[in-house]
Image (cartoon, rainbow, N blue to C red; front, side, top):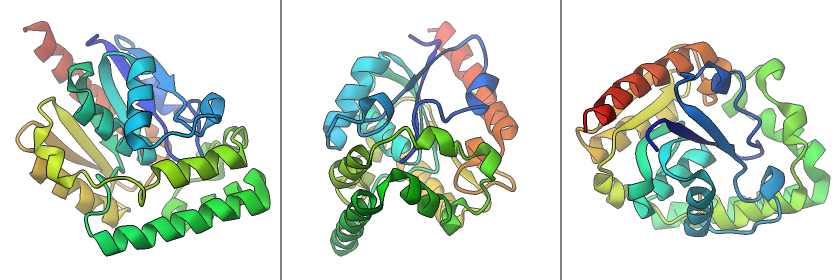
Length: 247
């Protein structure tokens, strides 16, 4: 379905954490926002990345997939494993995983320690710590969706880290050239790590991929600068929709 967008949120968020960005998307497109496994109404699901991708495509159906951070990693796997269902792909502050084996092993240990921390202190205290990271320094309390994040469970978030965290994910760098659908990769200009990753991803994907920066935004560009991010996505969606109508 070319006129559907399927949105997948980041770690500690839920499907309700896209506003106001989601409401600014082109209203010619149906929105379907999903809870990722381990989060929200899917908190009970303990799935690894391939299984999570299958779950998301089952519930999202055919459409244009938009994923942020963890959700971007999951949407990337959806596009690679279920390409017939992904007509277009938008990745916001997302990564294909960690290519270096030793770095990946170190990340597994950090993710396990973080999962233990969630179970030790509970969701409320953990969300406070999570949002205090420098990664979210440009995210104001007004657009952080803190109360919605508190709907999550310690067990669900810990499972998400252990089963589908960046360390647990098989790196996908060597599969990026398989992506044949239009791809838009977005990063905030104040998040240089993901600017670099985004540029590298686009180079690896090929001519069907586009990289764009959101000025004066950090890791959560869709929340920090929702109008600018939505306008960028809408411009891309309009071009994509025009292309699909001519097929």
